Image (cartoon, rainbow, N blue to C red; front, side, top):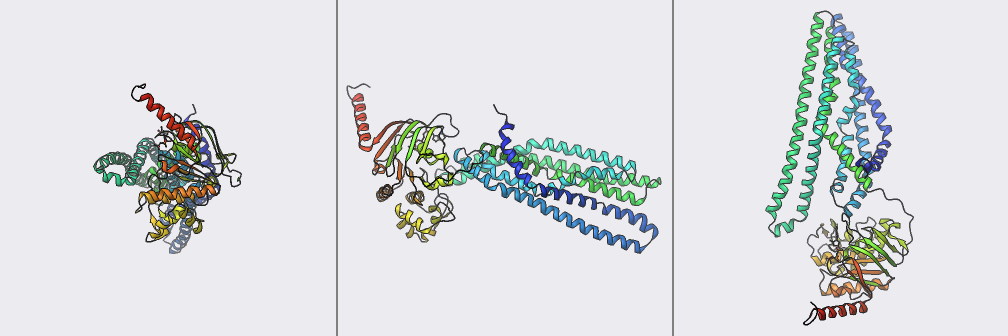
Length: 579
Ligand SMILES: Nc1ncnc2c1ncn2[C@@H]1O[C@H](COP(=O)(O)OP(=O)(O)OP(=O)(O)O)[C@@H](O)[C@H]1O
């Protein structure tokens, strides 16, 4: 079995490659950090000079000269600091922009087959990395290498001061490591619990109508509340921990600064140190330890980004990038299904087994069978949404996976059993949200689906805004818009899963007219159906049972066979028959 590390290696490599693209910017940030940190010495050195030189010489001219230099150095330091923050923010933005498309595709592809937590958090994980890259904690991490140098620098004032600074700094580093170790688990739990409660609230929101209608609000609230409380509890635990470490480091740093001052004063009294060095040492210590304090305070950001990175690496490994495919010409409507076996994602048993049949251009095939026979599974496999585990599905001779998925989507029109619209106008929905939508094609598709008259009767016609669950549209209206969407831009193959489940008589007639029109254009149509009205225009019937093909042939022949079987069963089970 592959170890989890191996499972994420491809994704890790992909993420690292994108991060590497920002290497010059990282170097620039490191260089700016070096100068900014060197300029950090301005304050302590100024203090040293003022105390030891200006005050003893009582020279205003020296003070003015020193102050002018210091003002200039502070200005440079400010500019460097500002530039560095901008560079880091851009590294984060670049990282996100470069991966947005890839992660979005991976999330959609994963959600289509396996809508799990990994898919749900993909985009959020990317955002958490971007947040870290543009945050002040990253700036602190750039400053951190300078901490030991500053601490060692304090020894130049007096070895004892150096010893105090380095042992104090060492203690703070130990506290940082303890913080990292102890907050890792609570942080992880908090973010997991948060994702679960958010996913649940999302689902409850989309099913709000049902919750309301079936009096499930109380029960749903109890369920959601327990997820929410779990999330809150783990968030509190992790915030408490970070807060504790933050307070410890802050208090300890302040104490250490005073201790430095105290030790400095003692050394001044013994005549081993100047007053300026005493103050400068204390200030330098504060500066040196500031990045540690900042890193601890913002550690949750680091941890979130680190878990985000890991789960993103897993997602990208499990959904590898699609290889570019040679563009194939627009296919003819010939479909060959050869020994196709389909296993629903996340399942272990096949829902379709060794199915073979051929559809010629201009033919309409009705796919019939009882519930669970595998009709919708076949529809999903024909559209390429689910891959075949064995066998092949060929469109005009080429296997479906030889087509670019976007192109394939254009050639195949699909009306799923449960039509879902997108937030937007009716026109946008019919045009499949394509930015290059063509009004003439939208209207042609709507006319074909007999939806045009219904749409123009709405107050805002094609520009009526609809929501994901249809908004103010009826079930039949949604289905007709779904049908128009499936027929947009002249599909080569049209797959309709229970297209007339919500249609009235008129709608059913229009559907049959549309199927006839498509056949005349040379397209092929597959209709998964329960009701006889839907297969009226079908020349061929494919009958499925328990995921296998039990009959395929001209409609009358298959129906006759069904009737004969039915009569035989009736005779066998009727009075005097075998029971
Ligand atoms: N997403 C899924 N995950 C796991 N198994 C699934 C999934 N979808 C369908 N199945 C299984 O595949 C089998 C065939 O289901 P399918 O939806 O294709 O049947 P159907 O013929 O379309 O039924 P109906 O007429 O009720 O729509 C069923 O046993 C079902 O449990």
